[in-house]
Structures are given as C-alpha cells and as structure tokens.
Picture 1 (cartoon, rainbow, N blue to C red):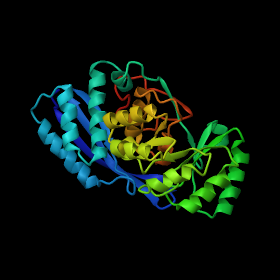
Picture 2: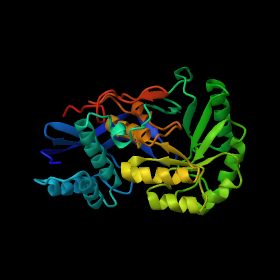
Picture 3: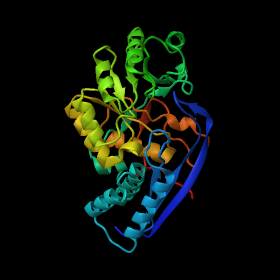
Picture 4: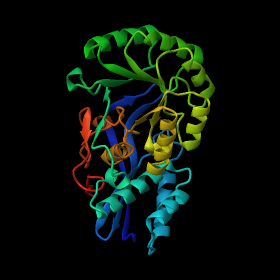
Length: 341
C-alpha cells in the first residue's frame, strides 16, 4: 500500500457536564483524528491518551505519528510489513498504535468492500451489546446492565444510593461498580461484602492498579466478580494478573492496551483462562468508539461492552452512532463513518 496523504488533526471537545471519577474531574476531551489516504480512499483513526489512565502524552503521540509518516513516504508496504512498521514506531505509545491500526484496517477493508470487523474475521458478530451509564441512561432506556462510578461517598451513602438505583432501575437490572482503584484492601473487603446484597455484575478496579497482590486477595473475600481495568495495560500485565489469579473480568481499553493486534492476543489469553472480556472506551469520539465496536465484533465478544460514552461529549463534526443496548455494525464498508475535515 502506498500512502498519498497523511493528515493529523488535533481536536478538543467539552463534555456536556464535567465528568467525575473517584480521583479526577474531566471537563474536555483532547485527542488526534488521523486521516490516511491511499488511491483516493480514506482510512480514519483516533489517538486520544486519557490523563490518569494512559502513560503517553498527546505530544508523544504526534511525534510517533509524524515518525511513521516519514517512514511511509514514497514506500509501498505489504500488509505484514506495515503491521511490523506500526509496532516499531509506536513502542510505548499505544494510543498512536490504535489510531494507525484503525486507519489502515479501515483502508484495507474498504478496498476489499468489507466491514472492518469482517476483514479481520469473516465470522464477526453483527451486533454488540453495551451497558448503560448511570446519570446518562434512564430506566426507560431499557439497558439490562448499568455502570456506576462509586467511591466518592462513605459506605452508608453508597448503600442509600444503591437502594435508590435498585428501586429506580428495577431489581432485574445488574450494576457494574467502578471504583478507579480508590480503596485499600480492608475497605475493599468491607465494600464488596456490603454490595453482595445487590445485583452486582462486577466490581471494577477496587484497589490501585499496581497492587495486584491485594486485588488477588480480595477475590477470596467476596462472591462478586472482580474486574481489572487500569491494571490491564498490555499482554504482559494480562499474564501477571492471570498468574496472580487477580481477576474474573478483563475490562480492555484498546486506546490503552495498544489496538487490534495486542487486544486480540489478550482476549485469546483471557478466553483460555475462562476470564470474561469487556471492550471499553477511553471516552473517545465516534472514530475511536466505532473502532472499539469493530474490535469487539471481530473478536466475537458476547458480553456487554462499555461503548456508550459518546453521549457524554458535546456535539462535534462526528455524530454519535452508538445508541441503545443493542448496536448493529455500520452498513458501509470499512469503519463505516466519515470525517469532514
């Protein structure tokens, strides 16, 4: 493949309202939209490292993208060489790798007149289930799983909140509780024991990411499945978590874990160990969200994924296409969306 044009476009989009996690408040989302043109066909990607979750900066992302642009100039790479080139130029910059893989897979799948997920796997899933988000999705939106950010309040306030949400959404609804690593082991044990009274699908990252030993210990003190998110950054971290028996669920963010190729390896490892795998966004715009959707479909993920976050951002020049619990794959070939820049 010969690249005729390589466009790097920085964006900054406010959230509809400040987004609060247990340890940070986000007012806007910054990132880069990548547009690669080959023989008048355009492939899109998004690189958006998330402060507090990603290790690289947006400046490092730009340097990585500009470096591979120079390497591509005037050269004709085949598929395998291109994947190797991306890996070399994005070492320790996983969000740049995700953007590049998305854009080139978008190009290749359009050239073959296939959906991106279909290009990667002919047996791809045509629909993906997603969870709702408390504060964004209402009981009348009919999500069967609702994700909640917890950890801001004392335990008694959290109990009152869970009682209210259970009454509002109904006892048949399952909840995913995300703590963003705010608790120590004794507090995590107490929290999990208390939450066993509710319909909890899993508790996500209850203890800080590097303390795999305590996360593993917590699993022995609760019947609620424990999910890891911030602890899971690449294949090596996945191996360590499995070796320590520290997780029932992997919450996999392609923007953090390095895109399609690395995520596929992690998913296959998780499946071999009977660990559930969830594909989750890093609060991207619709390019990144649709890339995550195709990644989930290509890897035949059947669990509810965390891809409903587009509703958190104000309108941009990309409309949010991921709505409702059941999301069908875009009809067009490739990624299935366009970017007017």
